[in-house]
Image (cartoon, rainbow, N blue to C red):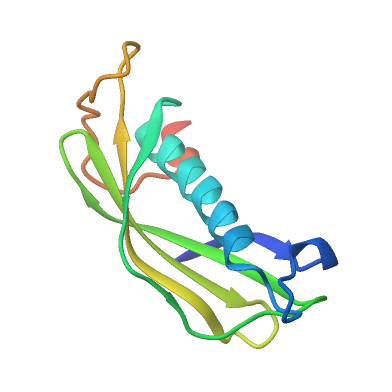
Length: 128
């Protein structure tokens, strides 16, 4: 799992209990997963198709620094399935886990399009 994105939990991210609002966290996850899919599939036209059960393990509070981890776990013909973990940067305690987030690669007409990818690649490997 690669943890590239970090977020600082600020007052505007909190729910009435004083902990991180789940909706804010899910927005961050969807955005980070979309960027991950776009980079892996080399196609800016990727959409979220499915998100499996979301397991909130612990909470985050104001001032915490969290990090979002993503890993490609399956390449379909037109799709990419990603696993996600969110954890506290300092304590490494898991905040949330999602087993499957599925993205679909689209063509210029908004229809599913084969992407031809079969494994995780890194930008540095594509530039050589």
